[in-house]
Length: 343
Image 1 (spheres, rainbow, N blue to C red):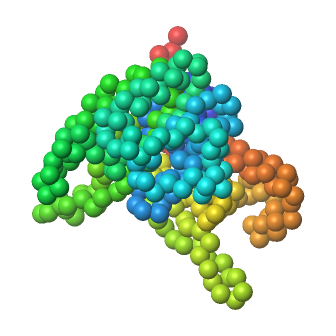
Image 2 (image 1 turned 90 degrees about the vertical axis):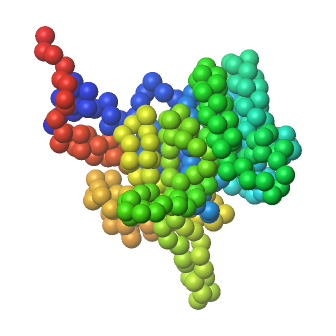
Image 3 (image 1 turned 30 degrees about the vertical axis):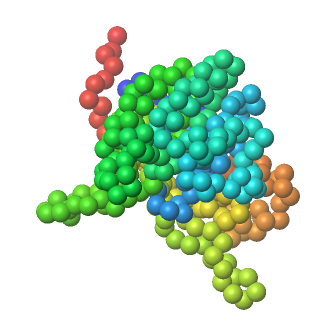
């Protein structure tokens, strides 16, 4: 099906980035495509993953890219695990001078989260600028009812889930009006299932109830795939990891899209290598690069810093074009239920 026919039938709308929304670059071209363009302003995004799958790193990358895209924008980073190293984040590119942090004792409960988010929305609207608000992580937050309980008393997180639902119901419009991208990080937990359905049920879940499933525009699930090793002084050392990202909910683009990306320790996401891997996996290499991968790798290793980043930008743009063309082909194999009536 041609692009014009797809566009007339409405199918092309789902294969390309939504130009009516503003997006924050995730730092990786294939991840942007999976998300539908990046992290959207005026929406809620949820990053879910096991330990050491790059959840905080994605938040740091978002802060760095937001600061470049919106020089006047406000960045709010709310860390509730008391394990955030600002110097480490700064070394990875977080613009610490632009980020508004908060004392850990002022961000311990869901109620604290609500009050702080309302203040952030008012501040952003007052200065007429965009905002990025990150919660790292939701699992470490308690609620006032639980804080009042004795240590050995069971709470089962029921009141916390209700408070999170209440928070998102009351704040979703404030987030939209203030042009804030609210990114909430969650840890995975094993789902306890029994009986016949245990064989088919999803193995992982996250805390906080189902409110995020309802109110989030994007739910991105991360999982660890493999380690990346290189030989240094005749000894193999782990220098990075491969991550699988699957957008299980997407109200911006097509859902259940997935990608693989590379994280290099001490550097962050390697968008160029991730794009190269995608091109090879989907048989698009020859459409983007005129030499073999081995020759191309030697070429980019010999480039200056400026040439390297120009090539990264070129390849990322080409990968985005090829991704959209591939989505068009996927949509072209389906029949639209409702067609535009001919005049």
